[in-house]
Image (cartoon, rainbow, N blue to C red):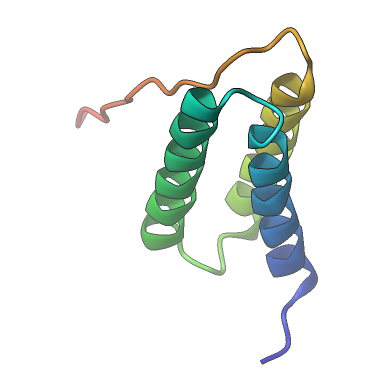
Length: 87
């Protein structure tokens, strides 16, 4: 199966996070890998494949987060759960 350019970008970002996790301590590495895996899976299940604008937004946001994680002064990664309340 041939991947689209957007799919290649998403996979590249995922691999980038895993590579960056290797530069951290073993305990933090496991935590980062777990967070990254669950976030990518969550978005893969909840976002329609044709929602290109939102996917591109998430790619830009993820790229910024990856650059922060690559910084040697950054020790860890965390998430903040966001709940959507009906208006």
